[in-house]
Length: 409
Ligand code: NIG
Ligand code: FE
Image 1 (tube, protein in one colour):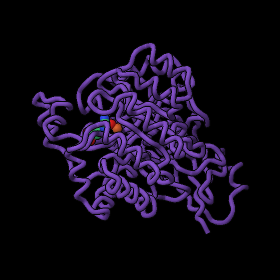
Image 2 (cartoon, helix red, strand yellow):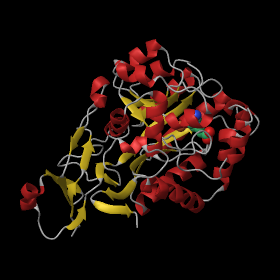
Image 3 (cartoon, rainbow, N blue to C red):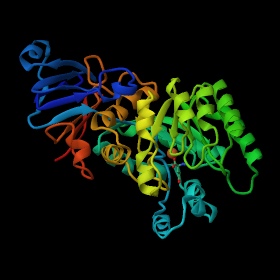
């Protein structure tokens, strides 16, 4: 018997309505007070006044008092590099003293350093490392997470990373969606064109293991033409794309994303009005990563323009050891609000329902009867406090697929 749960007399339920949000829709939330939620067999069965809802309750559910609490959907973190070995805190100090991300990469640090560490780590070590981070993500309210490979840059290690993601999906509650990022950087001792060929040759072995294919489409990494080759081939193997574009330079990555029907183009720190227009007329989401601009201390993506022109806007952490050592979606919401002028409502929609949509998941991201019961009981009186009272974890209980996955003691 799957346990059932009733959260009773909740001070505030704040949720997006289901379905993707563009433009002014991104400011809309459904907010209700003093009502209850009935959860059974992994799904939300009813939301409403307790007196009405109690007739539909079977058996003896666990009852949780919602007084003083706010309930929101679990966060969907749609862009992470969760699996890696080692950390790069030494680069943090260097950057503060003036070195740029590119300079650090060119002097043997950056992605290549993490590739070396990840190649040298066993599958078990990687599972152990990632579990520690994943625990923190769960405690901070993430119930679904996209996870990229890309610290292998050879077939053996890329497959090892996918094995790690599979294993994590078996042993802990956060649902992980794997993305293949073989083209994250060009490894040492091989030309870029030979490595692009190698990535193309990896695809048959990756097919069926990763839902998406990603490429770091950026000057000094992979050109639009390299990226197009990889993404088009990946499509033949059943992988749609979500790509790193326009982080440092504008080299045509947005158009590539739209042309190849990418589910999302991510970063967009440097993006033209023309590309925003192109995106707004497409089904490709614009995934913004406020934690990266905060951590690397450079320009933020023009979120207001992106939202106001009607793009499907998403925010995510980009958790990784180089450009964003932050796994808290609450913190990302705060940065999105204070630094990118997104409203609290927009930041909540962008980190739940729109993020789920960009991962083609329609059963999570909002709280309605019939949806998967992925939700957070927050120790705040209303949803606006979440980004406002920043830098602290407001999650009290995480419910994933109808079961308590974590609760504060
Ligand atoms: O999304 N930009 C490329 N990839 C990551 C950084 C990875 C790293 O520095 O290890 C990003 O920012
Ligand atoms: Fe990234």
